[in-house]
Length: 221
Image (tube, rainbow, N blue to C red; front, side):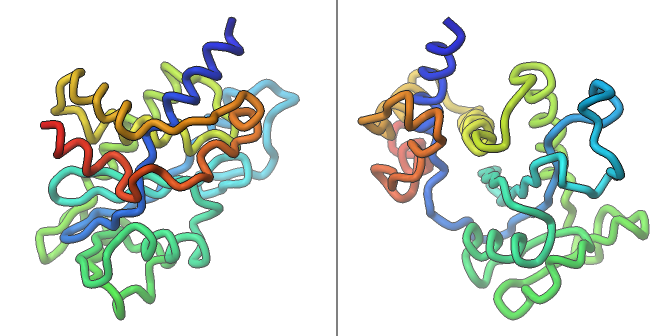
């Protein structure tokens, strides 16, 4: 049944935990919104007074992509400073170079990171240092195609699990299916009941390894 299939799928997604190991070096950072276009909704489901930067009818997602091509995605509350900056500190090692657009919520991070800004409002997509955010923006185009063509409908409560699956696919794109399977088995968790899955609580327990699956990928190659 659909119910059983979803339950098993969510149990598998629990093995895609991104871990707590911080990215370092040169990291491109950008945010996007997931939730579908208002114009495509039924008349009784349309959200009033929305625009391209609103998040009241969508989920704000921030992404981090380092120079080596390792991706991390996280669903956050908004694009405001109280949500953006803690996420940056959580996912990026202090002293690293972060590359962002000119969005104001990144202001104030220079005391902890080397902050390189690409001014998109001025129609500039490569700055004086040769830095760009093109790669992380390209990631968003793939992510949104996945939500439109495969997932179709995802609730806000469970969206992080689908982001974890996407990042796992992205980070293991050069790995064989055998390596992917071994990583999943190595990072598996037990005691996952349907109630926990439905309540969105199965992923709150600490993973077997705090580094998530990143370390396993290198071990099994």
